[in-house]
Each structure stands twice: as structure tokens, then as C-alpha cells.
Length: 173
Image (cartoon, rainbow, N blue to C red):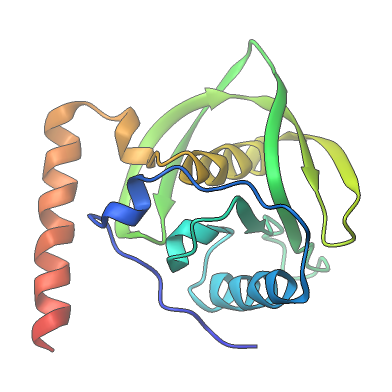
């Protein structure tokens, strides 16, 4: 397994719609393992393939925060939201592609998601709380959308300017 570099906003690849995955190959399985390792190392609770420069509909997540509880790494190919609750939840979101920037985003409180697993089979599960927020955030990545796209233009521009500055500083280092 290897840790992949995470793209930092603004990067045009983060704004592209990812391509559907056909057959689950051993290479895609390796990519999913690398993405999980990258996510845990960051540390984060979710990571979408476009964030590591791969424009495929793949995301990984693990929202278990309790150190006593066993981790629950999940790999979702071609995930799609099949149902959303009318009730909403506001959560302070962050993103590994927009480091150290956070903002409140309102999303459906519960969602049902269908996807293909590493086993090549179709799965479906209902998510709520942090899991619901995370899966929606990562699916947004697959559609070329970032959490800052939910913000007012001024706040979005301010965060984008900070990321441009951060990228410049990293390039000089």
C-alpha cells in the first residue's frame, strides 16, 4: 500500500465529473487500499478518487471516531443516493483538498445509497449523522462539487485565495 498525494483546491481535476467504473479490477482494489491508507494518514473520514487525481467514481470512508470501536473502512464504486430525508442536518465540514478550512453546510439528515463493492456486488445502506454527511460530501466530489460550492460567493472566494497562497508556499518549500 502507498500514500497518494492529495490534490489541493483550486485544481481543475477537482471540478470534473468522474467516470463510472465498469469492472472492479485488481488495480482498482489496490487504488481503494491506497486511498484508505491515504485517508487514515491525513487524517480524514472520507476520500474520493478525484482527490488523488483519478477521475473514477470511487470513494472510501470510515466515520468511526471512537478509539475503542473497530474501524469500518468502506469502499464504494459508482455510489448513488437513492433516497434523501426531508429533515436536514447542518455540519461543520472540512476537506482534505481544502486543508484547515471549515464551514457549515446543510444537507439531508439521512440518505440511502446504492453502490458496487469490492466484491463486484450491489450494496445498499441507509446512513445518518456523520456517515450521511460524509457520503454526500464524497459523492459531491465525484460530481465535481466541493463543500465550498454551498457557501456564499465572498466566503468561497476567501477560502480559494487562502488555498492559492498555500499552494504557492508549498511550491516554494
